[in-house]
Length: 610
Image (tube, rainbow, N blue to C red):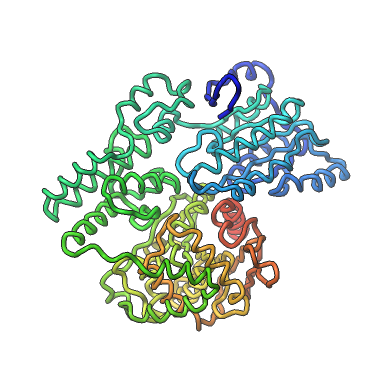
């Protein structure tokens, strides 16, 4: 939004006259091209595109402010970079009410380091993600920081040096159009292979999206006008009546219809029939932001407060409908449960600097939870979640950490950034779901996780991946699978800290603080999940790692958490055959820096398997 004396002005996307550029020779990168910024799949795709056109891509730093050093080295070597391509990082999902001055300042700090107006390569291109233009659910930070970066780049555009191109996705057609976009010489071009009508429906369900009106046309606007916005009171009341009239055996079908209808609206389908009831949500096109949007719609429709990680806990429409039906049945048979008491106590303990005492209390409380010594005898155990399909083997089996806000959702961005190179799935630690028992012993825990691994592997080879305490579980599971004759191909540990090590105690406040900050983003810190965390901490506190035969990669966060500056904080593991550092801290490495982790893991696996 631009506020001027004549009034307020808003952006509109209109078709770019690329035909003019096509008539001339499209820009062809020559010689050395320095790539800086995000290390996700976009950089890999751009590097391939440049190589195919005879250029020599050179991977530079994440921070454009540090580009001067590699530029100088290239010039001294007699191979100066003729082009600099900077890929802006994808911003962390954040709602508008969560945007504060500090978060915004950190996100746009890199803009002051852009090479506008400075000596350097003749061609300089800044690539922004699509969310910086059209926003969307959870895209407040991307939209605001992207607009700021675009404004900074505009100064370079006036000098004829810096171009801003919004390059969304890694589709070959979009990247191939980059040359024409640069040739055209205009500021603020958007290069994307997108269904604009479907995008408009996602951005503004039931209403016209003025930003995209010139791309979708009036017919699409009429279609959107016919579609409902978020479920209103009447829709919720109608569903409640249908559920009241239906018997327990009919409720799953009623709720499945509701789930498929809302999922179709989120994805932009014209009919609920387009949503397969037995296929994983992620395989049907859902990602972290659309998962939150579906949660919001179902919360409004059912009147229940549902976690954002809903589609990870219940990965198919049929499973989700069954869960909602079970909730409805439980509400009929029992009074509403009392509000949880442990999450407020945890926050108070954090403020008082007594997290160690609080986690000790959770360990004790977990002893009074139902438990199992043999997974085969447990009444209810969770199933694994398949995050993405893929043609390559082996299957990557990811183990989440065992904090109260952890789960398969931790690996959603990592899996997406692998871009189909491997199949990726995630295990679910028993005890975190309502009514689930906790493992009574470390052996019972490992056997339960091994059973889930077999479901994902389907007889094929696997690589075990674990973050933080999930890395401890991955190491223990590797040992068990090797002893039982089905060893994993490799073991990948992401910023692991061994329980009971001298590193953990001084780092605990910031680790737990990061967990508290993420309360409710994908999973709530309710009493079930907090006591489950205590139970798993109790199992792991005396665990001693046994040696394993699998090749091991340790991927470490390059940045400390705030407050870690005076401690030996960086992850260590013996023996790790290969150690790689990636941008981000303990948490953000799997959030906004998940692309860098995916690149490190994928490249390592390819290098050792060919």
